[in-house]
Length: 158
Image (tube, rainbow, N blue to C red; front, side, top):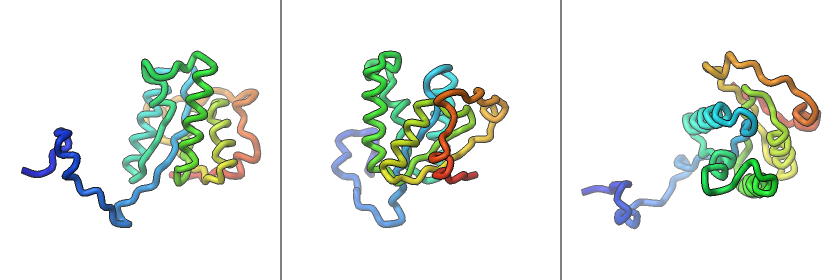
């Protein structure tokens, strides 16, 4: 009988050694959360899937910490705590991936500022698939405009 991941008793039998080819980049995912939360959560899950299919290990703290019973995004102190935890994890990431099909929120801009401060590369991606491709991004205004220092740091990817 081999290793069965569904059996917790087999955890000690797992080979945890990694060859250099097994190491995958850890990436922080930035995408919209506030606003149309069901749509934005579905989009963030699609972004996480895109990262996985690219061979990355994605961390989307806005999906993790906003689950019921963890932190409440509608409570400003808890939202700030969650964002801070995501930025703390960012320090260990290889780079940050920003998904822009739905535009850029003020939280995403703050995440990009944190990435620049941490010396992280920022990759800009678009899923370009339905239904996201046909959705017009919200009109940028106020803090949702990307500052020039962030625009200069973005590496646009296919």
